[in-house]
Image (cartoon, rainbow, N blue to C red; front, side, top):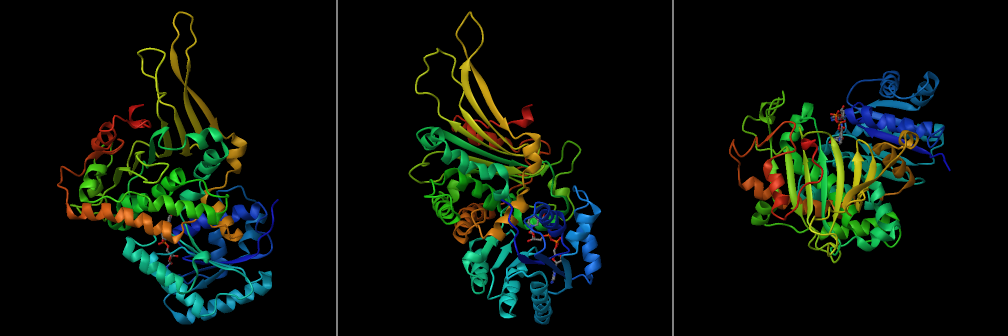
Amino acid sequence: MTSEQKALFIIFGGTGDLAQRKLYPSLFNLYKQGYLKEHFAVVGTARRPWNDERYQEIVRNSISGMEVTAKQANEFSSHFYYQAHNVNDTDHYETLRKLADELDSKYELEGNRVFYLAMSPQFFSTICQHVKTQGLVTENGYNRVVIEKPFGHDVKSATELNESINQYFPEKDVYRIDHYLGKEMIQSIPALRFSNNIFNALWNYRYIANIQITLSEALGVEERAGYYENAGALRDMVQNHILQTVAMLTMNAPTMYTDQDIRKEKISALKALRVYDKDGVKQNFVRGQYGPGNGQVGYREENQVAPDSQTETFVAGRIFVDNMNMAGVPIYIRTGKRLTKKETRIDVVFKNAPYNIFGSESLKRNILSFKVEPNPGMELRLNGKEVNFDEYRIQSMHLRHSHGEDTRSKMPVGYEKLLYDVLQGDSASFSHWEEVYYSWRFVDAVRQAWDEEKLSQEEFQNYTCGSMGPQAAKELLKEDGNEWYFRPDEN
Ligand code: NAD
């Protein structure tokens, strides 16, 4: 049943790209569905000297591509208020507090506040400090802080950031966003694993041969080169989205499907990641950088990129979660920019039957695929009998499920689901600090090994735009007698 939520959102970075492209449309969807009605207000803060009218116009623009009537757009945007504010300036928090208190009584918000930090991470700690010390947190309602990625850039910086946030907000009130966790098919992993005994029984090293995770992007760095040069694919995608996906695929069954129990198991899975030494990184990781091709320039020719940049735009790796259930199962991961197509998918590859009674032709693998995007769905590859009467032959069959048009149109986009969860106080789809810590611990080891060994021009620029990455990413699986099952470059 749809129940109305009461809350004040204070969005730091209210004029920014994330706020306009993701947050306002997501809030509008919650509004259309009746989760937000009369009792909500949004304060956008940023440096620009806008007023409420200008801000409301921006909000209406950001939802203009959606199904919305003029009346809805006006009513929705009338809940939005703007406060020009420099987050480093203590006095501004006083004005913000007064506005927040006024809106609290005007809309009867019962002291519930969501502080959304849609700004560069360098400001996270000062905002938390000021919000707390300048009296913006309430006594009567909840006070939740939503933090965007990246959460630090290594164990050290993440720990410092966490410690400084925890001085003002306890862990239970910190919601670290990883928008992948809001995606429908990522959320479907526990449902499939733990509500079907066929998978519950088979989900371990005895039956799973390997797991393959691909997050491929067709775009290059676009306008984000400045940020990307200092991040690279490892920090930008592996530390968060890919390792969170690994945790969902390898965690043990939670006692119950509650945020506390799920987080406990995810932390255990990430703690069990095998951390490599330098040789281990060399044997198990591949880095790449896109070179020119297919009408696109190479990474080093992009604006704001150093001509001898050592930043990787592609990562592939073989990783292990050393726990009782998954020990020894290689988990192959890869992500990169300027690959063949934009797609996220997971292939869980099962071992073959112990003996092939059908003769010499080898049996195809059973594979369970989660198609995360762009077309959410699932597929199970089985072997079955080929239809003929001369010879008994086995052929591969695909059982496919994809949600119908109707369901798809109702599917929440990532941010909408996550914002709803924040209002509900459900932190299952947000990263707990310990998950972040163990992910960075793993990633730091790879980063350190790479930083110590610079690559030459020929070693980098090692894949062409539009391919599926460097040849070495294919070799990585070949060494184990395996292959990537998702091969859009061969279609
Ligand atoms: P942006 O540069 O578009 O917006 C930054 C906002 O911060 C602007 O509103 C700006 O006015 C405000 N700001 C900057 N300095 C300020 C100051 N001193 N005082 C007050 N306001 C100030 O950035 P963005 O793309 O919206 O990203 C925001 C955060 O979200 C970042 O942490 C980013 O990593 C993260 N993120 C963004 C996206 C995305 O799609 N844009 C996706 C994932 C994560």
